[in-house]
Each structure stands twice: as C-alpha cells, then as structure tokens.
Amino acid sequence: MIKVAIVNYLNTAPFMRGLRLSGLMASDRFQIDPYYPAECARALLEGRADIGLVPVAILAKLKEYYIIGDTCIGAVEPVRSVLLVSDVPVEQIEKVYLDYQSRTSVALCRVLMKRFWKHQPEFMDAPENYLDHVGGKTAAVVIGDRAFGESMKHPFVYDLATCWQQFTGLPFVFALWISLKPISPSHEVELNNALNMGISQAEEAAEEVLDQYPDYFEVKNYLTHSISYTFDSSKQKGLETFLQMLSNLDDL
Image (cartoon, rainbow, N blue to C red; front, side, top):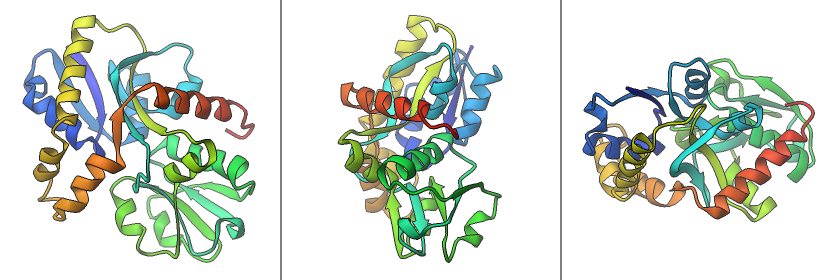
C-alpha cells in the first residue's frame, strides 16, 4: 500500500474529488491521509508517507527526491490564500509573525523582504493565537483558509504570489508531489491520473464544499483561477529560481 499525505486545505478540493471518484480513496493500494502543509513534509521525512504534497521549501534541504506526476499547488495570478497582513506599509513593518503551518510561505516572505522590498524586519515564530497580536508595526504571514477572512481586517494586504510575480515575472509553486524513493510507474500513473481528473472538475469540487464555504462563486473562482494546478515548464523555472534564492539566504 502506498501512503499519500495530502494538505487538508480548500485548495486541494479538486485533488480530493479526483482521488475519491477514481476509487483511490477506498483502494487497498493507496492510503490517503490529510495534514496541514508542514506536517505533510514531516510525515514524508519520518516515513509515515511514501508520497507527499509538500511545501517546496523543503526541497532545498533534501539530498534526493522524486517529483511525482505533473500536478502541484501553484499560482500564475493572485493566490489570495498566502498573505502578508499589516496595519502599516511593508517598509514600516518591524516584526513579522510567521505562520507555523507552512515552510514555503514563510520562506517566500523572507525572500521577498530581502530581495524585493529590501527590508529586514524581525521574524518571529507564531504561536497558535498569533493573529490576535497583529497590529501597529507587527505584521503576519497567514496562509490557507483563514487568509480569506484575515484579509478584510487590515489596511495593508500583500498577496505573496503576486509580489513574487512582480519581482521575477514567473509563476510560483507552493507545494509539489514528491517521494524520497522511487515509486512504481503504475502507482505514479494511477495517482497522477486521479489528480488530473479532479483538476478537470474543479467547478464540481467547489460545489462539494458548499457546506463549509457557502459562497460558491467565490470558491469556484479560487479553485479555477487563483490556484494553478499544472506543473509545467514555467512553474519549473519559477521553482528553480525560488530554490536558488532560498539557498543564498544566510538566515534560513
């Protein structure tokens, strides 16, 4: 049985639909386990998963890994769920809480601060209630589903995917399916086909989560436009550029 770790955010709703409709969710060949992003990486590293949808920042620390299939969590326009929120403009920010749920998003914020904004605030690991402490010159990186509501609470909201695109002219990849050892071609094809099936039915996936997210048109727009799921050559270049910049940051 192949153990698969998947992020349990709204942006994976098409993946979850594909896994279910393909029969992989109930298959005796695959075990699908949901986690938040950083825990996906931990499950892979600790051997609790054979394949994981992991934050790409972890790739810089791996000696060997295998990219599985041709899907990802990426963005070619505003992603809306990876934000830097603040009550002051970025150049006035003195402290930034870093969301504990994702390595990639906080690494992206550090890269952008140093190279794009050329500003170096103090970065702090965020406790669970850190959003209650955002204010004044203290900002925060917030990701995932809670970013939607948080964006309405602060006058300065920086979509980090958009800022990356302004800086590099490239799309950004937040998470990628990888394994640490070779996976049989048949398992890889089966998983990849299921994921692509779900991507092709993103609008239907939006309908399935209406009990959690009642604004269908908002969710549909997010799943069909904000998130870009195909790991193509432009995203490959974006990923390589990010990992190179990451390797040159002394404090990461």
